[in-house]
Length: 145
Length: 395
Image (cartoon, rainbow over all chains, first blue to last red; front, side):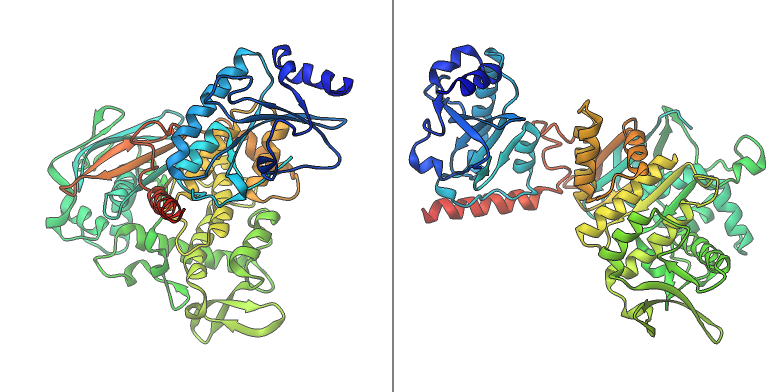
């Protein structure tokens, strides 16, 4: 990991997490990388949260993206976007938030993306969509970061 | 006026029991015939009963008993008057007797109109493109419709007289903020102008094509949304004077189903105008079958959780599709910060009786009574469930 990346990670996340940080999107398998659209102007590093840094049952990955001005931490869950899964996602969100608070990390943006850019079968004006929005979880077919 | 008003009802029409705490913005949701209109009409009657009696008498009606007044006001026969023997109506915990028309205070004060009411049947007020006279309606027409029509007729005539050249009612040079006018021009009128036209002894409101001055559309050729919207627009004009006064002498504004006939984009613009009325100091009561107004309350409640005013303004403008940071936007956001917004669900049980529930905490999705925002989200929820099941089966 470059010195710059290390410095940014030190500010954005907890020192305990540094051992889990991987350059670029290396923490994600190839099939999951397709869920993310990256920018050439930004740099990235990633951490496997679920079954990695955190105990299982959290969001899958944490991606730290940064440029000269900003640093953004994105918690990403790759999971079928189906109404029956909303409860699971909410539970995962609460566990992830607990983990974030425990390690005094700055705020994370939460994204839920279906695998292989599949469809989302939750209506945007439904209660479940609003419920997720209230928690700060955004559902996307692909996350542009 | 600043005191919070709480109305408790028991056995009034189909409303079995419940209470409504009036906020700066109060929204009533619920199924058809759940008693929303009845509640709103009662609200006006409680405040303006002396005024109502005076208007009926001035228009030549004979009122011998309170039943006559109820019957004329609600537009129903005496047997169907919603105020029954066992009806209980309490205002801030104090029982009120609607049958007592004596009242306190000076006659002028008692006969002041304090609630401006825009009824759902507003389209009926524009017969052949011009507002009907109070006495031109049948006896079955509720007071709120007759009175709205009469007021709008007078207001529109005043607006026409005040314009020396072409009598253009929309876009009106002295009514509404220009950005709001531009938005309505795009979403409702599509570049056409709302004008007054006199042919012989007949008066009309027409829509004219600005590119072809002689081409005009008469009332029945307008789109449904335009026909529904024009009386509402003129009502909003009346509530937004352009002179030194920021508001008329009404304390409350009641608007039934402002979304009628409007596309959600146009409705969002109308809601923005309603928010400007809140800023002018009116308290607004709305009945609605659209989740859009609840979406706005939900957004505003969450928006004011933010400390950073720059982000607040940015997100407010993003939500309402405003492009330029005008001073009025800052002023509006600042005034909305302290407004109390309430939502009540008129829930009908299996016996067709209504219980009123407070569902103001829209963000509290865990709470069972609030989950579906009074049933307004239920179709979207069901659609999501069904499509999810289909997707699972197809895998």
